[in-house]
Image (cartoon, rainbow, N blue to C red; front, side, top):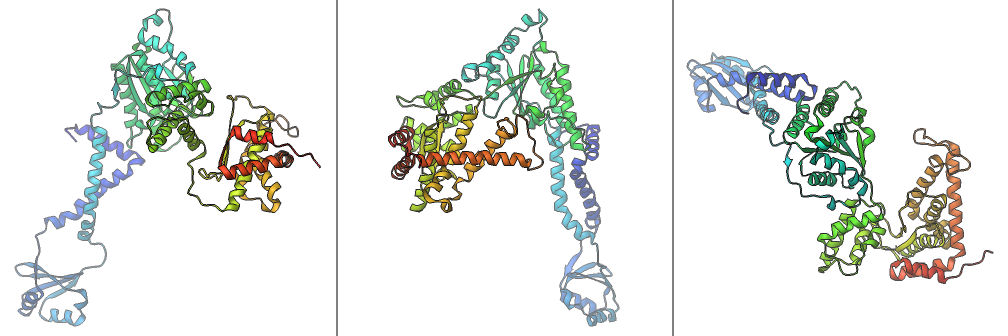
Length: 595
């Protein structure tokens, strides 16, 4: 533990006992004192020798025994010149035997039942030792020098060229780079750079990478911590870590402090009365004070990252602290292609592989997802023993990420296989017949993940505003699988395979009615839930829309039954059918006229 001043140790002990959260440490101290009290008589007492039962019998016959204490496990015998112990099963000490001892002139006594300090001490000793070790380790952990924390990194090699798909964010951060490189140019005209920048965006969009690239572009020191690094079991430690972080940053200025998952220490203060709540608020208050206390001309800028800006305390977001937010969103098609090109630097791609096509077929993917896609494709290539990643490897990796791993080992009957083929053919047929639907990329009856079959549709471009006709097309496609089952096999033969389709359709329609104002009956109002239920008229409207979409899907299936049968046979034969082949089969068949 080192040579610490006594006052420091006493103050630490006072803090420990003052906090409910460290009651365990106080209990350990009690155990240490109790163990010392219980063990002292036994340690200070003279050791008791042990004699055999035969020797005891001879001493008893010679009337040398003065006192016999009957205990569990034996007899403690007192003679004129010594104390000895005789091991003896308790069952042998009968009333007759006691009378025999008394007749020899010895006094007989019994150990009173109840608390035995010696026995209790033997149990507590191991606990006391373990508790003492834990207590000393806790004290050492919080007293030991923390000069190695936080770690300061110099010469960051990351640059903005390594960050793709976030051009707006990089443009927003250019002024920060200019300030860190030449702060006098700003201070001469009275400009003040933000003390804190808050990066907000979904996980995997590159917030940490952008922070590193910012430090690399500016050529300044970089200190990266997370919100959980400030948590500590003892009062005052977290607050001290905040102070130490900013103290070290000022020494290394110009410097960037990056706090990942800042919501761990920056949540809204609720005024809780527990010790943990008070400690949390103390830590947050220290962070607020530090951000207001240092001068920005010293070249210290704090960057926070979170995907939950709604839970942050308003005091963090006011001007003078984290008063500027940089949104790090999911990349668009051009951004996804640029990100794929960055990740593909270390991947050997076969000639003719189009990353633009992969970017087009990965809507909603983050930068981390795209990096994982290329890594999965490289793994597929390595498994096959080839040295280049082909288009087939990239397609397989995307299918694995979006649909799940293939389960070719799953054994299903021919009847279930045909039913799955009809179900997926219904989805594919409706998607081909509706102009507002996304184009079908492929259909398969090979099980993936929890699904026995899948139809993959990919948009031609990113959508930010979805019209009603697109939503209705998606609903009809979702209902197409169950509609095909009913048309081909009859109402009594439909299966549970449409459970996920029904859940998806219900979610879309619920938002259409309650959030997007797309129901003429309900109107353009937002409907709030009352517990787990919605108003009755809203539930009836949701059911009406779903029933209409299901009838529309059945109409598509019935009028194009020949195309459905052709798609079913193609799936049964090939298991996976590409989108171009699906469209060719549908266009080849003529629709049936309504009766």
